[in-house]
Image 1 (cartoon, rainbow, N blue to C red):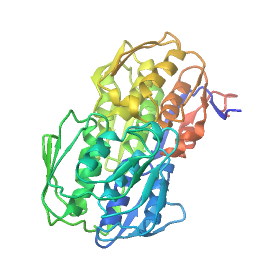
Image 2 (image 1 turned 90 degrees about the horizontal axis):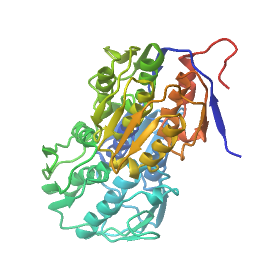
Image 3 (image 1 turned 30 degrees about the vertical axis):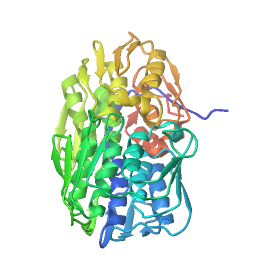
Image 4 (image 1 turned 180 degrees about the horizontal axis):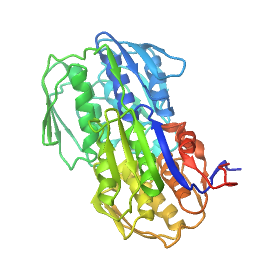
Length: 436
């Protein structure tokens, strides 16, 4: 029997939310701390499935760390650039792309190793070809164990003779992030060329900014060429506070835009290094009232209007916009989102299916979705496809005048286990209409 969460109709949204740490930053700084010289104290680490998979992998790879009881503070003993396990390993990484992609590149640097990287059913459907092709071209010995171009993979090391590297960036920016992270370990000047249009560029910005905090500079030439000078080493900053997750903030901000009240999001500000902070500009364009504070952002309801935008750079929060558009006047077009198709599920197909259930008119193409909201949102049961972001963004349907049922709500554990609890804290219901 399927596990279903019923969210009753919410009359008003009002209050504040303290954001958990960013997933994108958490997994990057865990790896950088492991590779750095010196010890690092990470504060506000995200406690979620994806981060736990990275922690378990690092432990098996010989990295020593101490994790607080609530798993949000981690003290890591840096290994000064050395990750060279002496035994055969099989690392299970669930559906964590932020773990399997950089670990693939990192482990390929060993002269020889014997490591299998694998994951859940969906991970075995997510492409890794562009990264593996680049690594093999430069000497790495990597074999596919089931389906060609997809995990699981068997890595035996061998990456060498690196100087000029080419990578395709049209499917995932994580491939480039993986190469950038290992570049300082090669000990000589490296030039990385992206020979296709790079998707999700703000995630590359995160990588480069975090590398700088750990002592390594990257020269970025218009996202086409990246130069990393040799003789740079990762050096611990001592302590690093992970800012709140901007992608997770999008759901609460949209809730306020749809049916506030005002919602204040704490532990993040307009100077965030995350690209998804641009979500605020989109909500503003749609008509919401946004206020920036010292360590918070707030959103207040106003009449929402449709938009027509290229969201290639912020594909995760584009999903939140898709559901938010059901409450806006006019037809919304979200363009250049082909990489929705290779995420936790085929998000373009999934979003189309679930949006249609509400009565909305939906048109999709290879890389776009056009949404015309219904006059009245229907009461629906949302299939989540084991995709955390589908569960969270469709929770916004409870802001209509009907309830919404979410199948497999525990899929949010991938990035935000407490999401539904936090939503309930800022939700107000009509009398005799409590959330189950």
